Length: 321
Ligand code: ADP
Ligand code: TRP
Image (cartoon, rainbow, N blue to C red; front, side, top):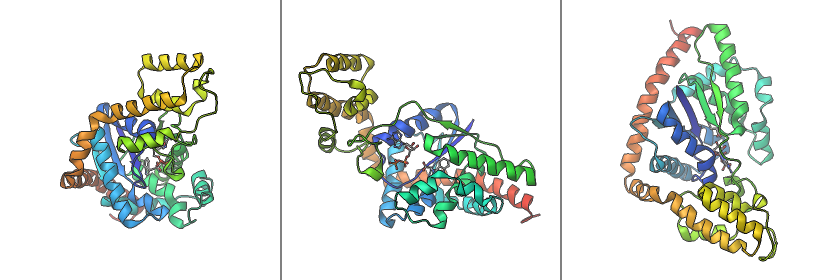
């Protein structure tokens, strides 16, 4: 099955991104033909600092590679290295009703968060549709917040096929639900926009400082505590074995264990969890030529597919004979 997903280079990936998206992307690559790209055209909609964006593109690529993305099998590239998507986005724009985009909640949410209401932000779902359709993607693994964009993609594809013939594969979303929302250190959803993240490869002393700051309630040490309402426990769930988790749950229920003790163990477990990938991540940092080569090779492979689809589209709409 051809699967495709994109991730915006707007920050260094955090553990919420890993458990909510990257881990599933990595496991799906085994059984499928996976196409993953770094959505730099999309990132422009939030006016990033140019130098930072260059760094984040490499960070996303290095994190995926260190965590197990296999560049021989899976295609990984920078979106802007395949500019054919922009041409397709324009063509799709011309059959996309305004009302379809006006109904998209992510535009309204982003403007409410303070992003400028620019045309790129409004037209964002059309570019996303082009990303998906140009590669004949069958399945798009994304978080629940992206469901509407995949529905818009399907709507656009169906309109196009009705008007010009069966050109596009109609994609399905694969909503990744294997973990609940990962909380950040302040208890809200972990998100780069809230400055409450723990980085995947952050040094242990920094992780320790952040974990020690995790918001907990004020139940005294000796009293029983509710594990299911505890942010520290929610993070522990991601990295502890079932057996260890069971023991912690009993300690919460029994009372006598302070949050500080649990936090110390969480720091160790987070470190152990990502330890097997740390050396690879450091090696990549010292071998940026290799990282760039993976991205340009990926772009070449992706571009071949994109060019073929785009010429089919150009013929269908009357831009080519
Ligand atoms: P952010 O919220 O930091 O801006 P993005 O929106 O760029 O993160 O998310 C990239 C991917 O990571 C999406 O698929 C999203 O569903 C997933 N993700 C982000 N934060 C979390 C979280 N706290 N818990 C679970 N998944 C998350
Ligand atoms: N909009 C997605 C996000 O913010 C990123 C993205 C861009 C994407 N193009 C895509 C995801 C195509 C899946 C398919 O997470």
